Amino acid sequence: MVIVRYNLEDYVNLETVEVLSQDSVALIDELTILFANVKPLENRKKRSGRRRDDNYVPDPNFKATTFPKFEGHDLLCQEVHISINKLTKVNYMKMRNNIFEKIEEIMEKSNKEQKNSFVTNLMILMSKDKFNSEINVSLYSEILNNYELFKNSKKIILNEYKVITETIKVVNIEDYDEYCENNLLNDRRKAMGMFVANMIKKRLLNKEVILEKLVEYQEKLKEYIEIENMKEIVEQIAENIYILIENIRSELYNDEEFKKILEEVKNVTKLVVKEKKSLTSRVKFKHMDIISDYEKFVKTLGG
Image (cartoon, rainbow, N blue to C red):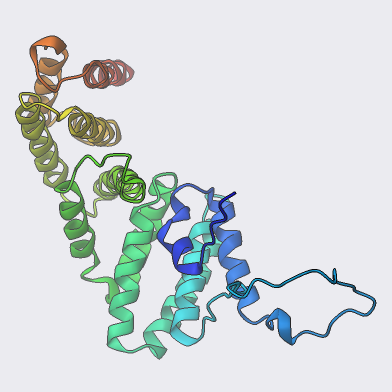
């Protein structure tokens, strides 16, 4: 039997916030703060009457699990992250007020470098939650209107989105760690697409951001379907096209550039899979779903 030990760094690298529910993540964050102040086990008073097997030999390599102790600026940042992970439509005002209080403390007590780091980390945290994207954008909109500290935060989001959409790749499962990391990156890319789309709905960004990205994706897809061994990348591109159109069509359905994008989607549905080196049925069906959903949407408008 092989025993594998994990340390705190391994836990952080797993980015479990991507796969756990929001409630679970919030609970972990709360426990992290709670147990940061708990005395190590060896310093506690031993219970009377407790016996140990005489043949027991302690593992010399064993190390007790330790939790980081957050103080000052780090503690304030952690509390903001916990509140965001707890955010729902029901508790929005309560969590919003908590977050605002902590932001004001950070602005008052932290130095310039700490403030800049806080803003960057907060933007990444809020934009990678695909399950709470809409409400996170609502919160971000209020933060942007209330705090000068976030005046350059849009650039942070757009730069991050630009980088993450230019690094679509395939990783062999034999390199398991990198494979898992790449899957998280794929999820994060989709989540950021939803976040950017919701920013446009809130009039925080211009529609050109999405239109340009959709055209870029479509050009890559047309190029890659003609190249061998690009099927997985083509499927990832199709997923991202689907997410962007599904989340922004209500804002762009009358836009002439968007209509051209939809025509290109229709063209993909007419392609023959066997005639293209890296086109898959999954990609075709995803494009068919886009057209089907769009037609249903238009009907709801009486069109």
